[in-house]
Length: 422
Image (tube, rainbow, N blue to C red; front, side, top):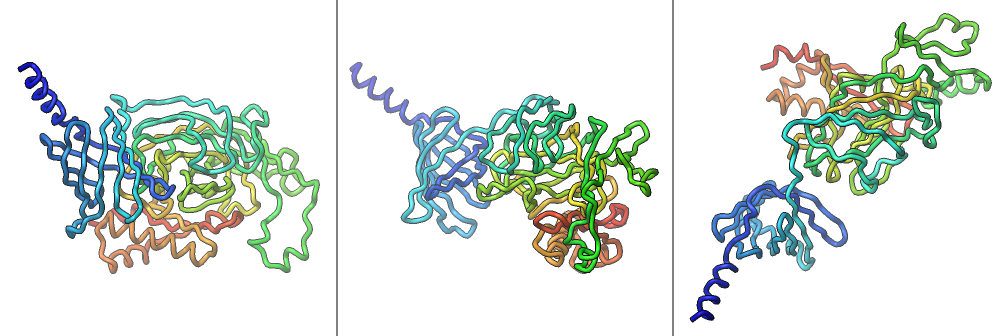
């Protein structure tokens, strides 16, 4: 009698479904490459349902074992999954690319704090590549604010100490909890402040911006001193040892960040002098205090890098180096889930700005313009003709970058022009 009762109790225990309802972060390894997605699961007794973007799940869960089929909106089978629950982790196999078997794991998302935090980060080392292979220095949640500082483009810190080799060494990367490929990272620059009284710049115009005749005729002086003194009290910079005609020349201080980036796609490692859809060395002089930047996410956690502070810079960074200096930075991160920009975008109090980064001026203009018109059509519900009228009467272009490997053009529309758009 006791043996029969024990068998009944054991059978009942094995059919008790694990509680796995809620959101999960899934990683699927296919032929050595890992893909990351966000899924939702729901249990009702032994019945299991869920979703992955447009895919729908339907299956069963028995104790800690589960099995389900994923179907497309048209009813076509995408794949079959099996797995075992281990607390806040699920491991299993799937078949969706015959004959390849897929290994997958899923974990509960990290629990966000009760309210947004302000975190102080003191950097110890600096990185000269943008890459998802670099371990994150700090985990932050959407809504959190980070206060930190950066070295200058040559690797010198606020106290004048060389901390890194040159080439735009970066602070970070910062891991944003919940960020997955297909999302958009939102970075609000709350403060971009100077933290020393010196800067250095280039002293010759880059060849790519000049006709060959000028380059042949003119010779730059090797001993020209292009070091600057920063006078924060007066809000200007002046040459430390000015030449005769520049004794009274001053530049208005307009602190900005030359580099803001997420980890590039496909596990690429890009030198911090490069720029692309991931952001990077964009050198746009409107990436300053009060600007919000939008970047597509390519890796779990996004992995945010920031560096290359400029005390001031004209359009295009014409001499190859702006007024390069270290910087105090405060930024707040947020996340737009399930929607990705095709490249960097930004906004401030005055403008919506779309960044076109390409091999040629023509392609950069096309990219910037297309992204901006898509932005207006999506967010303002404009028809193509309506978007054409708005941009045709209010569009402006900035030459953001001429000196780095790719051309960077910004297409922007004044928010005042959109005030009458319903």
